[in-house]
Image 1 (cartoon, rainbow, N blue to C red):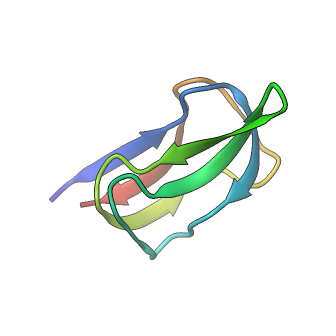
Image 2 (image 1 turned 120 degrees about the horizontal axis):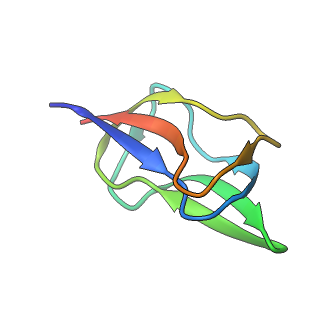
Image 3 (image 1 turned 60 degrees about the vertical axis):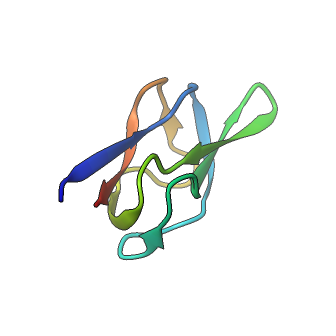
Length: 73
C-alpha cells in the first residue's frame, strides 16, 4: 500500500471537483475538471484506492504536471 499522486496534464483553472477526501475511487475515475482553452479536461485517477487529500480548490490555477490529489492504494 502506498500513496499515488494524481497530476494534471494541462495548465488551467480547476472548474469542478468531482470527488473529495475519504471517497473511494477506481482507476480511471475522474477526480476534477480543468478548464483550459475553453475546454474542460478531466483529471483521472491512475490507481484505485481512497482519496487521501485534495490539494486544490475550485477556481485554483494549476500548472501542467501539478499534483492535485493523493490516492492511498
